[in-house]
Figure 1 (cartoon, each protein chain N blue to C red):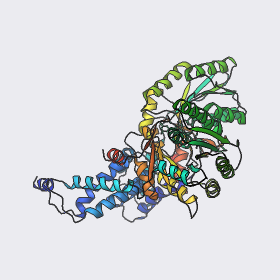
Figure 2: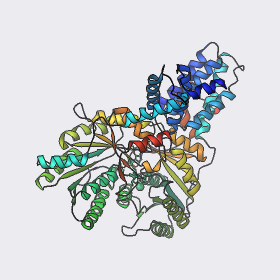
Figure 3: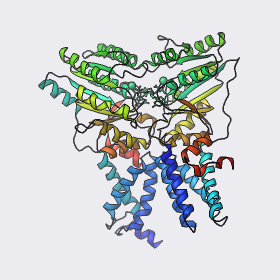
Figure 4: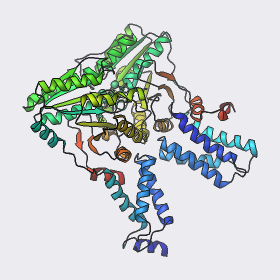
Length: 310
Length: 305
Ligand SMILES: Nc1nc2c(ncn2[C@@H]2O[C@H](COP(=O)(O)OP(=O)(O)OP(=O)(O)O)[C@@H](O)[C@H]2O)c(=O)[nH]1
Ligand SMILES: Nc1nc2c(ncn2[C@@H]2O[C@H](COP(=O)(O)OP(=O)(O)OP(=O)(O)O)[C@@H](O)[C@H]2O)c(=O)[nH]1
Ligand SMILES: [Mg+2]
Ligand SMILES: [Mg+2]
């Protein structure tokens, strides 16, 4: 009982044994939130190093101290080192050059690339830009028609909102995505489009044959931003997905940011947000929260940390 | 399949235990710790992992046996417990020729339903069933085109409507049409959905009421993490699916999330998807899966013990 009291009152110097117990519980908590084992270990180690030998504050237990430290560790991992204001960058680039602003999405199969690309399109159209959406998934059945439907819907919405314009660029199935992307950018430039949004086929990150064309794609399309779409549903694999996509772009190019889709399907198990940034130091800019055009939010770190710690 | 990696780790843990001269509590704990980390890294549900640990611990009697026989005993316990995770001993549905078997697909967004529908249709077609596909996904952009293009490639009759927004209506009409034409197997594809959106779940129940499936199959992505369990439970309650198709097993993920879904819903995996092409589908057997998972001669024959 005395120990317990002392623990609460604070002023206790934390040794490895105290921390090990508190951190084991913390790790279990993170794993249940779908944080990958590797990322959870890293976070716990950071917290241990920060706290070892320090004293708990007044009226604070070891456990509470660990919680606070984990809060900041998560915050730190999720906070981008450079800030990204995409709209501002588009605006700037339009003012300074003729080439349209080019954004492309990449990712594994079925994560939500095409849908979230369309959501980004909706957002840019609300800001009255002229968009070209390039159908560079020339493999999966219905991929071209899927984007076609989105373009029609977006044009209809845009007409109602007034302003903005959107067109589909496609060369059907079977073609080389990199070449089509390059053509789309050229077409956009000669026709005064502001932004080109390039959809790509889903690909397995552990298959070289599928991953290596990404380097050529990057060279030919020269995207200003490459967004990797990851889904909140994915487990531990998210770590390797992020690493492999980032390195597939070649030595001279990295991913610019992540969009984590399907956050509405996992409740508070939003560990993917941590896993992908942990793996690459690349920030999450957007989260997908549903299947409609308005279900795209900019990443809110408080929201994420509260879910993870709650 | 990259499962070998998980299997190898589990196997190494077991061998290093059994290589010890003295197998004491500590050695057993070390092995269990290794196995648990390997399972967690494969996305097996956190709670299931700790249950499995306790079960193995109580079943392994450290006083029993010596040397080689002790090693076999421990291997057997680990093997059985792993089998128990993926094997619910339920008999999966077997379609019969000469009558209509309606199979409805359900699952989360992007799991691989539409792709797997055609794979399964082509599989049954090869087995001599007269098989048709119905697209009851009226929500996702391009869903009907996707199913249609797949069906045409695989030469399988299909039904769908571009202009009808009500999936219940399309499903009913499609199934009725194929029934009239005396098809053996009628596969109904539906939109992706999740438990958080109640209306989507009610829609699924309405489609099921309209087509009265003989079998509902849940399609699960092998890369799913900790959320797989609760989503599958919710699908089980709403749709009472009778089997699972585990997709994207050609990927890097080890299917631990899906394994947890099997354990939570007591429903067997019947097929696995191993690629994006129509023939990338294999029937699934739990014992073989675990043997393959553990992937080595050491474990061979244990299934027959
Ligand atoms: N609930 C939810 N569903 C989403 C979200 N984003 C996308 N989806 C759904 O996920 C499914 C797959 O989306 P797609 O955009 O086709 O995914 P993709 O990555 O382009 O797929 P492939 O091109 O086949 O690799 C669709 O049913 C989408 O409606 C999201 O944020 N929340
Ligand atoms: N590598 C691999 N890809 C797969 C497999 N099964 C499906 N896919 C891919 O996963 C993506 C999504 O598949 P779909 O069949 O469209 O998924 P769905 O469940 O119908 O999606 P929604 O209808 O939007 O909910 C596509 O890119 C498929 O090619 C598989 O076994 N292996
Ligand atoms: Mg796509
Ligand atoms: Mg589908």
